[in-house]
Length: 99
Image (cartoon, rainbow, N blue to C red; front, side):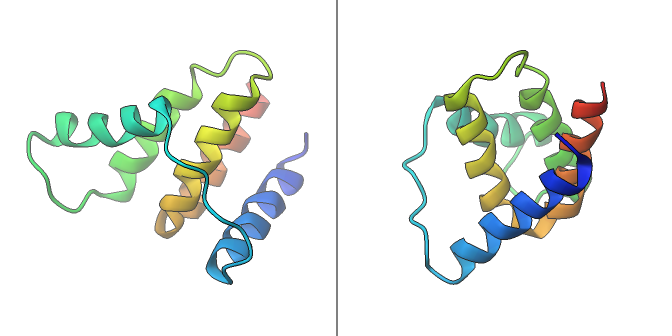
């Protein structure tokens, strides 16, 4: 995969969701873990910083050690839910690929 290809795929997916073209799959265990990790790290519910979102996303991304479609799907769902932090998420994915 190339960095450009990953960024373009994320942009395309987010644009489709914004336009209502795709339906978001139902949340799975990984999506639930992502949501649970945020309040656990902050200690209470509030708006989370981009840094905290990216750190939590990166933690789950680090668990992807092979081409496991359900995990990739869940990470895509999370990225779609966190469109406000898309640049940081795309950078985290690109850095992971480069590793």
